[in-house]
Image (cartoon, rainbow, N blue to C red; front, side):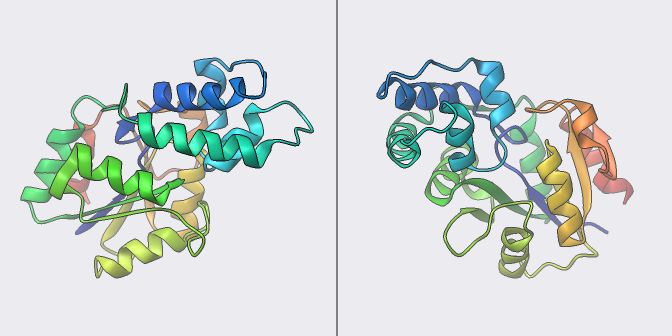
Length: 212
């Protein structure tokens, strides 16, 4: 029986792509670098904001640190301009919450942004929100998931992980958890090979959890 669900954030619960693109291009523009398209940003995300910037700047760029700092400041001030939960997500979280299932979020986005976004869009529906920090290695390292599970008093047998990318599939495996891959996010179905389950719409989460 599933008692705890750990979610990825970007591409799973929230569509953050436009705001990520805008903040990236704002930072790039400060150094005269070419802007990146939405589809390029889609391919660059998933491994944390440092890797996003490293992929967005020109090869052999010497301004990665400065660009990253500008990105973080701009994104922190503008991360809710276009971001919204995917259709059906709020209803799913409420159903899980109302049925006594604990909900955690583990993301490679920097920790302060993860906590602020979860609070703004999901309020008390999220029990624990953990982002990338100096003491929490990025996914696919399982450390963030283990930290969330410890705070939620959860075990591997009654916990399932939900995400939209190959990073999430690997994270779940590294944590010893079953994985639900979702295809409404930033990656296509082919990237989710290895997931225990692949679903097309949020309501499938409830049906699947009830069957386990």
